[in-house]
Length: 488
Image 1: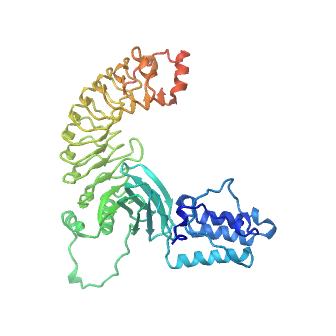
Image 2: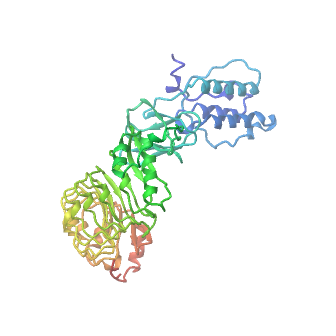
Image 3: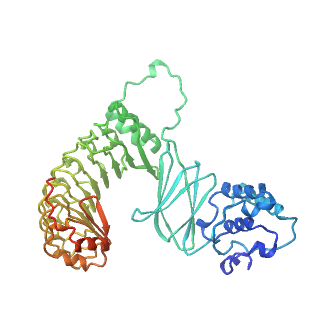
C-alpha cells in the first residue's frame, strides 16, 4: 500500500539514478508518462508510442538527442513508486514500456490522479471530436482534441458544462458538478446530423397516404427522436426556403433539442422551429451586416426561449416575444425601434446596438448586467438607474448625462463620440476598461486618474492603450481636440 500511494509523498524517482546507462531521452519519456498533472502527461497513446519509436530507432550514439527535451522536467509525484531490478539493456526497457501501454489500452485501464482538482473522464464514440469544458458562467476553461481513447481532464471543483462537437454530428452538451479530488466519467455519444435512411418497404398503392399538411407535420415531429426532429426541421426549412443551404447546428441534451443555430441570409420562414417544444436558444442571425433576410418572428409565439439572437436581420417587430422567459436578446443591426414587448422580462443581457431604439423606458427595473445600446438616436439613460449593470455601451448616441449610472458596479463603459462632458458620476467605481472621447471631458477627469482599477482606455474607436500610456499622452496634450458627436 505504501508503494501504491508513494506518489503523494515522494518526487518522481530517477531511472538514471538506478541505472546509469539509461539515456536522458528515456528518462524524459518516463517522467512525462507518470507526471501528476494531466496537462504534463502524454495526452494520447499515439504520442507516447511516437516518442518511444523515435527513441528505439535512433542510433545508440545519439539517443540522447533523439527527442527534443525541455530545459526543465517538472518534478511531479509518480503514480506508483518505481522499483529497480536487473535488465538486459535500455532497448528492453522500451519494449517493456510499449507492452505495458498496449495492455492498458486493450483492457481499458485509465489511471487518474486524485488532486485538489476533480478529474473528468470523457469517453467519445467518434475520433477527433473537440472536447470543451466551461465554467458556470460559460467561460471556456479547457479545450481538447479527442482521440481513440478516453480523455482525462483536470477541472476545478464546482459546476461546469461539457460540450463535445464534430462536423457532421449533433453537438453533445451536459452540465455536471464535481467535488475536489473526485472523479466523474461522462460518455458523449455523437449522432450524425443526417440519420441513415430507413430501408425501403414496398407497400400496395392503396396504402399511400395523402401529403401531410404543415399542421399535421407540426404535430408529428415532436414525437420523433431528437436527432430525427433535427433532420425533419432542417428539411422543412429547405423546403420552405429553397435558397437555404441546409446548414444547421443543433444541441441535444437529454433527448431534447435545446439549441438550434443557422444563418438567415436565405431564410424568410422559420415556422418549422415550432416543432422544437423544448428549445431554449435560437440563433437565426445574418452572417454579416444587412445579410439576414428574416423579418417575421411570429412563428416563435408559444416557445419558451431563454436566448434569441436575431441580429443583422430585417426584424422590426418584437411583439411575438411578449411573455417569453428571455434572459438574453441580441437584435443588433435590425430596424427594431420599440422595446415595449420586452416589458416585465428578466433580461440580464440586451444588445440593441445599431437599431432605431430611442427610448429605454420598457427596460426599467430589469436585472440587466450587460447593455449595448450604442449607435442609436438615444438621449436619456434614466430608465437604467438602479440596474446591476457591469457593462454599458452607449457610444455614438445623444446621451449627455451619466448621472443614472452613479453607484453602479460597472467594469466596462463605452461612451465615446457623445456630448458627455462630466465624469463625476463615475466616482468610486472600479472600472477595468473605458472608451470615451478625452477632448470632450471638462469635469471629473481626475476621477479616472485616481481609479487604480482602470487597465484599458480606448478612444477614437480603434485606438486602445494601457492606462499608464494614456495618461502620458493626455499630459502631453494629445487630446485637446474636442470630438464631435457622430449621428447614428
